[in-house]
Length: 225
Image (cartoon, rainbow, N blue to C red; front, side):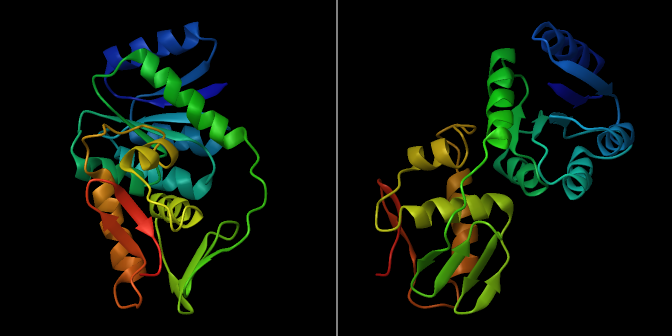
């Protein structure tokens, strides 16, 4: 597997390069955002490991431009910034996963395997999901409510799809961490609450009936109340 590692800290870059090479990965290095972007756009990579704070061009901007060039390439973002808002910015820029420094190398390997596995598994065609006047088309990545198109980020779309596939059933935070975030976040994180709030503003605000409901201490459920 061929990986592009964009990391400006020499010690971190050397450590990751050695560890990944020992695991039989082919690794190309870039020490700033501009070089990383040029390499990502001029060669095929199975995965990108991208530091968020880079000279030349920020990791967030590199991520956005790479995602526009190659929507399917897995991107794992590394950063010393561990606040919820920082994670959300990285994910909304197009990153598939987020790893806060310092981290265990074994965890990085596990996340790489999960990202690549999701890309290589060919999903079966999925039917459009409906609840009241809300519809979600998994193939076209389109969401509408009362005939009005709703724009969602990739993570919001995945969260809404999972809730709709389990409509009428209470979905716990643990369920969402496992199936939408691949256990990438600490169970004490409020990232789920933040994204549920994002969805409510886009899917429920201004519409009736309300479809996203919170059951305190248990989780969330999508239903017509």
